Amino acid sequence: MKFMKGMYIIWPDYDYIDKAIDSGIDTLLINLNSGDSKEKTKELFERYHNKVELVPTIAWMQPHYFLFQDQQFFDGNKFYEKTACPTSVSYIKNLLKFPLELYNNYSCKSVGIDFESYGIGKYHRVIEYHELWENGYICKCDRCKNLSQYEQRIINAENIQKELGTAKLYHLPCVNPFIWRIGNYWFNEFTYEKWGAWGRILKNTYKMKKKLSRLPLNTSGLWMEKFTARDYLDRLKEIVKSPATDGYWLYPQMRMSKNCYWRLHPEDPYSKESLAELPYHSFIDTPNDSTSDPAFFSKLKEINNNIDDWRSGWWFGIGSLIYGFFR
Ligand SMILES: [Zn+2]
Image (tube, rainbow, N blue to C red):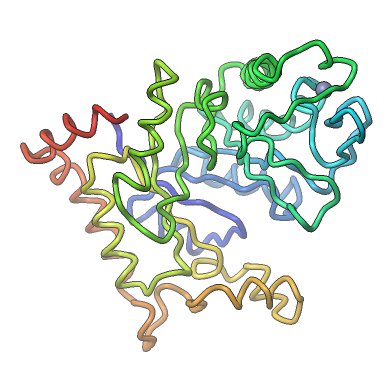
Protein backbone atom coordinates (compact mmCIF):
# COMPACT_ATOMS: atom_id res chain seq x y z
CA MET A 1 0.00 0.00 0.00
CA LYS A 2 1.17 3.48 -0.86
CA PHE A 3 2.31 5.57 2.11
CA MET A 4 0.66 8.99 1.91
CA LYS A 5 3.02 11.96 1.83
CA GLY A 6 0.51 14.74 2.22
CA MET A 7 0.37 18.44 2.81
CA TYR A 8 -2.44 20.72 3.86
CA ILE A 9 -2.86 23.95 1.88
CA ILE A 10 -4.58 26.94 3.46
CA TRP A 11 -3.12 30.01 1.82
CA PRO A 12 -1.63 28.62 -1.40
CA ASP A 13 1.87 29.70 -2.34
CA TYR A 14 2.95 28.06 -5.59
CA ASP A 15 6.67 28.47 -4.85
CA TYR A 16 6.36 26.44 -1.69
CA ILE A 17 3.94 23.94 -3.16
CA ASP A 18 6.46 23.37 -5.97
CA LYS A 19 9.27 22.85 -3.48
CA ALA A 20 7.14 20.39 -1.51
CA ILE A 21 6.17 18.38 -4.59
CA ASP A 22 9.77 18.34 -5.75
CA SER A 23 10.64 16.88 -2.31
CA GLY A 24 8.19 14.01 -2.71
CA ILE A 25 4.87 15.33 -1.41
CA ASP A 26 2.22 13.41 -3.36
CA THR A 27 -1.14 14.56 -1.91
CA LEU A 28 -2.45 18.08 -1.39
CA LEU A 29 -5.42 18.69 0.86
CA ILE A 30 -6.79 21.96 -0.43
CA ASN A 31 -8.79 23.97 2.10
CA LEU A 32 -11.75 25.54 0.29
CA ASN A 33 -12.61 27.86 3.18
CA SER A 34 -9.57 30.13 3.15
CA GLY A 35 -11.34 32.95 1.35
CA ASP A 36 -9.83 32.42 -2.10
CA SER A 37 -12.21 32.86 -5.02
CA LYS A 38 -13.46 29.82 -6.90
CA GLU A 39 -11.45 30.99 -9.92
CA LYS A 40 -8.23 31.05 -7.90
CA THR A 41 -8.96 27.61 -6.52
CA LYS A 42 -9.60 26.26 -10.00
CA GLU A 43 -6.31 27.77 -11.16
CA LEU A 44 -4.56 25.78 -8.44
CA PHE A 45 -6.34 22.57 -9.45
CA GLU A 46 -5.48 23.25 -13.08
CA ARG A 47 -1.85 23.68 -12.21
CA TYR A 48 -1.37 20.57 -10.08
CA HIS A 49 -4.04 18.03 -11.00
CA ASN A 50 -1.81 15.95 -13.21
CA LYS A 51 1.12 16.05 -10.82
CA VAL A 52 -0.22 14.93 -7.43
CA GLU A 53 -3.42 13.79 -5.80
CA LEU A 54 -5.63 16.78 -5.02
CA VAL A 55 -8.24 16.63 -2.28
CA PRO A 56 -10.85 19.41 -2.30
CA THR A 57 -11.50 19.89 1.42
CA ILE A 58 -14.38 21.67 3.08
CA ALA A 59 -15.37 22.29 6.69
CA TRP A 60 -18.63 20.66 7.79
CA MET A 61 -19.58 23.70 9.82
CA GLN A 62 -19.92 26.89 7.85
CA PRO A 63 -20.38 29.87 10.16
CA HIS A 64 -20.99 32.15 7.19
CA TYR A 65 -23.70 30.05 5.60
CA PHE A 66 -27.28 31.06 5.97
CA LEU A 67 -29.26 27.97 6.98
CA PHE A 68 -32.93 27.80 6.21
CA GLN A 69 -34.98 26.74 9.21
CA ASP A 70 -35.60 23.24 7.84
CA GLN A 71 -31.80 22.80 7.61
CA GLN A 72 -31.22 23.82 11.24
CA PHE A 73 -30.81 21.62 14.28
CA PHE A 74 -33.80 21.90 16.62
CA ASP A 75 -33.43 20.70 20.20
CA GLY A 76 -37.14 20.90 21.04
CA ASN A 77 -36.90 24.48 22.32
CA LYS A 78 -34.70 26.38 19.94
CA PHE A 79 -33.24 26.26 16.48
CA TYR A 80 -29.45 26.31 16.05
CA GLU A 81 -28.85 28.61 13.14
CA LYS A 82 -25.23 27.51 12.61
CA THR A 83 -25.65 23.78 13.19
CA ALA A 84 -27.16 21.57 10.52
CA CYS A 85 -29.95 19.14 11.20
CA PRO A 86 -28.36 15.68 10.84
CA THR A 87 -30.96 14.49 8.32
CA SER A 88 -30.98 17.57 6.09
CA VAL A 89 -30.08 16.48 2.57
CA SER A 90 -30.15 19.99 1.14
CA TYR A 91 -27.42 21.10 3.58
CA ILE A 92 -25.11 18.32 2.41
CA LYS A 93 -25.86 18.97 -1.25
CA ASN A 94 -25.10 22.64 -0.83
CA LEU A 95 -21.92 21.98 1.16
CA LEU A 96 -20.50 19.45 -1.27
CA LYS A 97 -21.43 21.21 -4.48
CA PHE A 98 -18.12 22.96 -5.13
CA PRO A 99 -15.87 20.16 -3.80
CA LEU A 100 -17.69 17.71 -6.09
CA GLU A 101 -17.39 20.06 -9.04
CA LEU A 102 -13.61 20.05 -8.49
CA TYR A 103 -13.64 16.28 -7.93
CA ASN A 104 -15.39 15.76 -11.26
CA ASN A 105 -13.47 18.29 -13.32
CA TYR A 106 -9.99 17.36 -12.14
CA SER A 107 -10.27 13.56 -11.83
CA CYS A 108 -9.80 13.58 -8.06
CA LYS A 109 -10.15 10.40 -6.01
CA SER A 110 -11.60 11.91 -2.90
CA VAL A 111 -13.24 14.79 -1.10
CA GLY A 112 -12.06 15.97 2.32
CA ILE A 113 -14.49 17.01 5.04
CA ASP A 114 -13.27 18.65 8.22
CA PHE A 115 -15.83 17.81 10.89
CA GLU A 116 -14.42 20.14 13.52
CA SER A 117 -17.01 22.65 14.74
CA TYR A 118 -15.22 25.90 14.01
CA GLY A 119 -16.66 28.99 15.60
CA ILE A 120 -17.57 27.45 18.96
CA GLY A 121 -18.05 30.34 21.32
CA LYS A 122 -17.71 32.93 18.60
CA TYR A 123 -20.88 32.08 16.75
CA HIS A 124 -24.33 31.78 18.08
CA ARG A 125 -25.69 28.34 18.79
CA VAL A 126 -23.15 25.82 17.62
CA ILE A 127 -23.32 22.17 18.59
CA GLU A 128 -20.17 20.06 18.42
CA TYR A 129 -22.20 17.42 16.74
CA HIS A 130 -19.50 15.27 15.19
CA GLU A 131 -16.82 15.62 17.84
CA LEU A 132 -19.16 14.76 20.70
CA TRP A 133 -20.99 11.86 19.12
CA GLU A 134 -21.46 10.15 22.49
CA ASN A 135 -23.25 13.13 24.02
CA GLY A 136 -26.73 12.25 22.90
CA TYR A 137 -27.50 15.27 20.73
CA ILE A 138 -30.86 14.60 19.18
CA CYS A 139 -32.70 16.76 16.65
CA LYS A 140 -36.43 17.17 17.17
CA CYS A 141 -37.34 18.93 13.95
CA ASP A 142 -40.34 17.69 11.97
CA ARG A 143 -38.19 15.40 9.86
CA CYS A 144 -36.26 13.93 12.80
CA LYS A 145 -38.81 13.82 15.61
CA ASN A 146 -39.61 10.11 15.29
CA LEU A 147 -36.00 9.01 14.84
CA SER A 148 -33.63 7.88 17.57
CA GLN A 149 -30.26 9.53 17.97
CA TYR A 150 -28.62 6.45 16.47
CA GLU A 151 -30.94 6.54 13.44
CA GLN A 152 -30.27 10.23 12.91
CA ARG A 153 -26.52 9.69 12.90
CA ILE A 154 -26.76 6.73 10.54
CA ILE A 155 -28.90 8.76 8.14
CA ASN A 156 -26.45 11.65 8.35
CA ALA A 157 -23.52 9.42 7.38
CA GLU A 158 -25.53 7.68 4.67
CA ASN A 159 -26.59 10.98 3.16
CA ILE A 160 -22.99 12.19 3.07
CA GLN A 161 -21.91 8.95 1.43
CA LYS A 162 -24.72 9.10 -1.09
CA GLU A 163 -23.86 12.65 -2.10
CA LEU A 164 -20.16 11.77 -2.39
CA GLY A 165 -21.03 8.98 -4.82
CA THR A 166 -17.77 7.51 -6.07
CA ALA A 167 -15.60 10.04 -4.22
CA LYS A 168 -13.74 8.60 -1.24
CA LEU A 169 -14.13 10.46 2.02
CA TYR A 170 -10.96 11.79 3.67
CA HIS A 171 -12.05 13.14 7.04
CA LEU A 172 -10.59 15.29 9.77
CA PRO A 173 -10.15 15.06 12.78
CA CYS A 174 -12.91 13.42 14.87
CA VAL A 175 -12.91 9.91 16.22
CA ASN A 176 -16.53 9.14 15.45
CA PRO A 177 -17.76 5.69 14.34
CA PHE A 178 -20.55 7.07 12.17
CA ILE A 179 -18.07 9.03 10.08
CA TRP A 180 -15.38 6.37 10.26
CA ARG A 181 -17.83 3.88 8.82
CA ILE A 182 -17.83 5.81 5.53
CA GLY A 183 -14.24 7.12 5.62
CA ASN A 184 -11.21 6.12 3.64
CA TYR A 185 -8.47 8.13 5.41
CA TRP A 186 -8.55 9.61 8.87
CA PHE A 187 -6.50 12.81 9.00
CA ASN A 188 -5.23 12.63 12.54
CA GLU A 189 -4.61 15.86 14.44
CA PHE A 190 -3.63 14.25 17.76
CA THR A 191 -0.14 13.97 16.27
CA TYR A 192 0.09 17.68 15.48
CA GLU A 193 2.47 18.51 18.30
CA LYS A 194 3.17 15.34 20.20
CA TRP A 195 3.93 11.85 19.12
CA GLY A 196 3.16 8.45 20.61
CA ALA A 197 1.72 5.56 18.63
CA TRP A 198 -0.54 4.34 21.41
CA GLY A 199 -1.90 7.61 22.81
CA ARG A 200 -2.14 9.46 19.51
CA ILE A 201 -3.32 6.71 17.16
CA LEU A 202 -3.91 3.20 18.46
CA LYS A 203 -5.94 4.14 21.52
CA ASN A 204 -8.45 5.72 19.12
CA THR A 205 -8.36 3.10 16.40
CA TYR A 206 -8.74 0.34 18.99
CA LYS A 207 -11.81 2.00 20.44
CA MET A 208 -13.36 2.18 16.96
CA LYS A 209 -12.23 -1.29 15.95
CA LYS A 210 -14.50 -2.79 18.56
CA LYS A 211 -17.46 -1.07 16.88
CA LEU A 212 -16.62 -1.29 13.19
CA SER A 213 -15.59 -4.02 10.81
CA ARG A 214 -13.44 -1.74 8.70
CA LEU A 215 -11.38 1.25 9.75
CA PRO A 216 -10.10 4.15 7.69
CA LEU A 217 -6.37 4.45 7.15
CA ASN A 218 -4.48 6.77 9.49
CA THR A 219 -2.42 9.68 8.27
CA SER A 220 -0.60 11.68 10.93
CA GLY A 221 -0.64 15.49 10.85
CA LEU A 222 2.36 17.54 11.93
CA TRP A 223 2.00 21.27 12.66
CA MET A 224 4.90 23.21 11.25
CA GLU A 225 4.63 26.43 13.26
CA LYS A 226 5.08 24.47 16.47
CA PHE A 227 8.58 23.21 15.65
CA THR A 228 11.99 24.40 14.58
CA ALA A 229 12.90 23.03 11.13
CA ARG A 230 15.29 20.58 12.71
CA ASP A 231 12.82 19.25 15.29
CA TYR A 232 10.14 19.05 12.64
CA LEU A 233 12.22 16.82 10.39
CA ASP A 234 13.24 14.66 13.36
CA ARG A 235 9.61 14.19 14.32
CA LEU A 236 8.64 13.44 10.73
CA LYS A 237 11.31 10.76 10.58
CA GLU A 238 9.85 9.18 13.70
CA ILE A 239 6.38 9.21 12.17
CA VAL A 240 7.32 7.65 8.85
CA LYS A 241 9.14 4.82 10.61
CA SER A 242 6.08 3.89 12.66
CA PRO A 243 3.91 0.92 11.67
CA ALA A 244 0.99 2.72 13.38
CA THR A 245 0.53 5.17 10.53
CA ASP A 246 -0.27 4.88 6.81
CA GLY A 247 0.92 8.33 5.91
CA TYR A 248 1.72 11.80 7.10
CA TRP A 249 0.54 15.28 6.24
CA LEU A 250 2.46 18.47 6.76
CA TYR A 251 0.35 21.19 8.31
CA PRO A 252 1.98 24.53 7.55
CA GLN A 253 0.07 27.77 8.04
CA MET A 254 2.64 30.51 7.50
CA ARG A 255 6.06 28.87 7.31
CA MET A 256 5.37 27.77 3.75
CA SER A 257 3.26 30.64 2.48
CA LYS A 258 3.93 34.27 1.74
CA ASN A 259 0.17 34.59 1.20
CA CYS A 260 -0.71 33.65 4.76
CA TYR A 261 -3.43 35.98 5.98
CA TRP A 262 -1.52 36.70 9.20
CA ARG A 263 1.55 37.80 7.24
CA LEU A 264 -0.49 40.10 5.04
CA HIS A 265 -2.62 41.56 7.85
CA PRO A 266 -0.42 41.53 10.96
CA GLU A 267 -2.52 44.18 12.67
CA ASP A 268 -5.80 42.31 12.36
CA PRO A 269 -6.90 41.06 15.81
CA TYR A 270 -7.38 37.57 14.32
CA SER A 271 -3.74 37.60 13.16
CA LYS A 272 -2.46 38.84 16.51
CA GLU A 273 -4.44 36.22 18.35
CA SER A 274 -3.22 33.45 16.06
CA LEU A 275 0.41 34.55 15.99
CA ALA A 276 0.57 34.82 19.76
CA GLU A 277 -0.02 31.09 19.99
CA LEU A 278 2.57 30.05 17.43
CA PRO A 279 6.21 29.91 18.43
CA TYR A 280 7.77 29.91 14.94
CA HIS A 281 6.77 32.35 12.20
CA SER A 282 9.67 32.51 9.72
CA PHE A 283 9.75 30.64 6.44
CA ILE A 284 10.89 27.09 7.02
CA ASP A 285 13.91 27.46 4.70
CA THR A 286 15.07 30.96 5.72
CA PRO A 287 18.86 31.29 5.75
CA ASN A 288 20.62 32.54 8.88
CA ASP A 289 17.69 31.75 11.13
CA SER A 290 18.28 29.22 13.88
CA THR A 291 14.64 28.05 13.76
CA SER A 292 14.71 27.40 10.00
CA ASP A 293 16.93 25.50 7.59
CA PRO A 294 17.81 26.48 4.00
CA ALA A 295 18.31 22.76 3.29
CA PHE A 296 14.85 21.87 4.65
CA PHE A 297 13.49 20.64 1.33
CA SER A 298 16.51 18.56 0.38
CA LYS A 299 16.28 16.93 3.82
CA LEU A 300 12.56 16.34 3.36
CA LYS A 301 13.33 14.71 0.02
CA GLU A 302 15.89 12.45 1.64
CA ILE A 303 13.36 11.31 4.24
CA ASN A 304 10.79 10.63 1.53
CA ASN A 305 13.31 8.68 -0.53
CA ASN A 306 14.05 6.43 2.43
CA ILE A 307 10.48 5.65 3.42
CA ASP A 308 10.16 2.42 1.44
CA ASP A 309 13.40 1.07 2.91
CA TRP A 310 12.46 1.97 6.45
CA ARG A 311 9.07 0.41 6.04
CA SER A 312 10.19 -2.90 4.58
CA GLY A 313 12.57 -4.30 7.19
CA TRP A 314 11.76 -7.34 9.35
CA TRP A 315 11.55 -5.17 12.46
CA PHE A 316 8.89 -3.07 10.78
CA GLY A 317 7.00 -6.23 9.80
CA ILE A 318 6.86 -7.40 13.41
CA GLY A 319 5.70 -3.96 14.53
CA SER A 320 2.94 -3.99 11.91
CA LEU A 321 1.70 -7.36 13.14
CA ILE A 322 1.55 -6.18 16.74
CA TYR A 323 -0.04 -2.82 15.93
CA GLY A 324 -2.45 -4.57 13.58
CA PHE A 325 -4.23 -5.88 16.63
CA PHE A 326 -5.20 -2.33 17.58
CA ARG A 327 -6.17 -0.98 14.18
ZN1 LIG B 1 -33.69 17.41 12.21
